[in-house]
Image 1 (cartoon, rainbow, N blue to C red):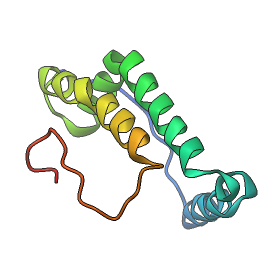
Image 2: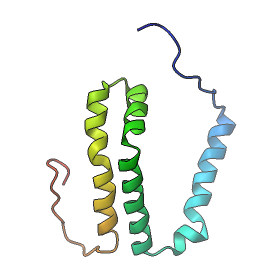
Image 3: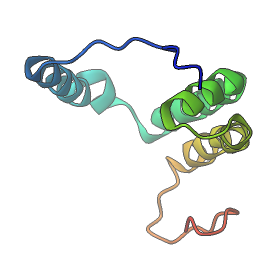
Image 4: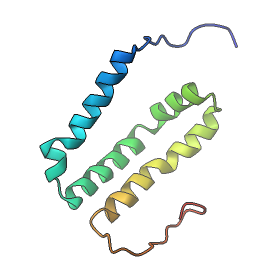
Length: 108
């Protein structure tokens, strides 16, 4: 390590955290989300998966900075994150109350 700072972060106050939590609650209760169908929500998850895939290199860099993992590891992990969002986006409107197998070990 060179000891050089790679980022600067503001310190959040208790009031900042309270405002963030309240904003999240308002978003969850907001009409657009509550009125959205499962199909519409699924489409958003698929779009998120596409965005993750398109921005994989930047996301891997951020994850490396956040966790301290080596870049090779975060690149490998980010490579399939978009697939997860697309997979579950496709399932969003197909809830049947049954266990649906997936092709990733240890995640069922």
